[in-house]
Amino acid sequence: MTTLTLNNGVEIPQIGFGTAAIGEWQQDDSFVTDTILKAMAVGYRHFDTASVYGNERALGRAILQSGIPRQELFVVSKVWDTEQGPKTTEAFERSLERLQLDYLDLYLVHWPVPAYTRETWEAMESLHDARKIRALGLSNFRKSDIEQIATFARIKPTYNQLELHPYLVQQEMVDYCQFHKIAVSCWSPLGSGSWSGVETKDKPIVDPVIVALADKYDVSAGQIILKWDVQQGRIVIPKSEKLEHITANFSLWDFELSDEEIQSINALNRDHRFGADPDTAHESNKNVAVPD
Ligand SMILES: NC(=O)c1ccc[n+]([C@@H]2O[C@H](COP(=O)([O-])OP(=O)(O)OC[C@H]3O[C@@H](n4cnc5c(N)ncnc54)[C@H](OP(=O)(O)O)[C@@H]3O)[C@@H](O)[C@H]2O)c1
Image (cartoon, rainbow, N blue to C red; front, side, top):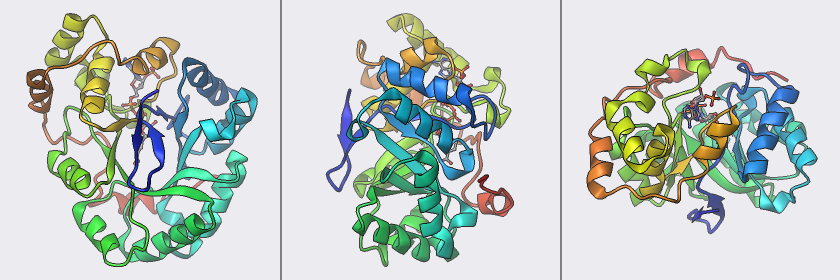
């Protein structure tokens, strides 16, 4: 398993398993647990959840049932908009309780809410001091949000999770994060899951450039996209319910894209978001409650 080293020395497996909307959005049953157990059997050790996904309990059950030692797993969760500021510590403790864990490997601010960022981050720093979180990170943070954190943070962010796929390459943001030694993780790396309502025909996974490369290397289109990310030092967290996809997404090591091929995928960029825009997301996020 390939790992990257975060700026605080913590190792993170480069390929993680996305857990948003396994089955349905906020589904939290044995189907979710069994899907995660399949991913564990394939070899995944890094799992990406969030309080708002409503499935932390299912991940917690999978962890217990798997029998995998806790220190071999890398568990990520996130504080939702409505939990930020004064509620951050309580939200974190609820996540731990649902996951049946006593620490998280990485805890993220799910979306920037500048009015709350300082209070949220300082609460996270205290949890880090108490050794309840091994690394602190961000999600959907823009350059201005990272600059805001830099004005007060005692503990530097290690990671920023961004919507990133061949139709939204975010090169400037990636360069900015990498320059500041903030690891870049790609959400919806294959162009989003069922929660988004986007049809397959509109996703980069069927783009002729990607399909031609998949034919050339005798791999799947998903593997080409994920390889394009990992070769450029990014973390990926694809989600799948199908064993064939779960296995393929974890098997990226038998081929190598050339620099020209990486550029040809970069050139597919359309600055197109399938998910929310950090400039406006909070307006709707604040109406979305975290299920208990
Ligand atoms: N921080 C944030 O704001 C944020 C937002 C969204 C998502 N995320 C995280 O990012 C993770 C991944 O994003 P996502 O779930 O939106 O989308 P994604 O991983 O880009 O794509 C998932 C979709 O692709 C299909 N798929 C998976 N592997 C495939 C393959 N090899 N070939 C063809 N199709 C394949 C899946 O279908 P099957 O299940 O049928 O295989 C599913 O419909 C989430 O689960 C979540 O953990 C974070």
